[in-house]
Length: 101
Image 1 (tube, rainbow, N blue to C red):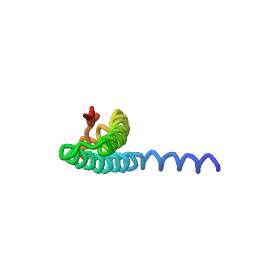
Image 2: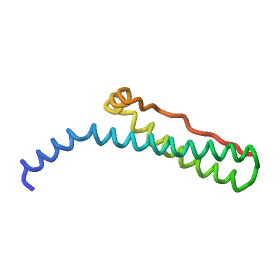
Image 3: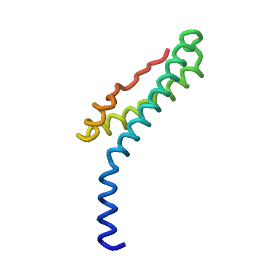
Image 4: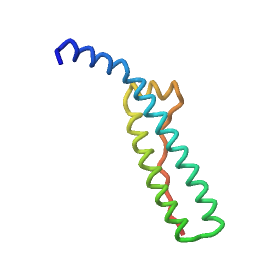
C-alpha cells in the first residue's frame, strides 16, 4: 500500500467516524432499552412470586445492563460523541442496583 492510498484510507475513516459513532451509540441504546424492559418484567414477576430463579435472572440481567451502561457512558465522554448525543438525544444512564430478598 503506497502512501497516497494510506492517506486516502485515513481521510475516509476520519470522515466516516461520526457515522460509526452514531451507529454504536444507537445500537447501545437499543440494547439497553431491551435489557431494561427485561429487568422490569423480571421485577414484576419477583413481586408476584419471590423465587430464587427469578432473583438470579434479575442479577444476570442487571450485570448485562450495567455493562452496556458502562460502555455507553464511556463512549459519551468524547466531545464528538457529546455533540452527536445532543443532536440525537443519547444520554448517560445510571447503573441499576438490586439487592434481592
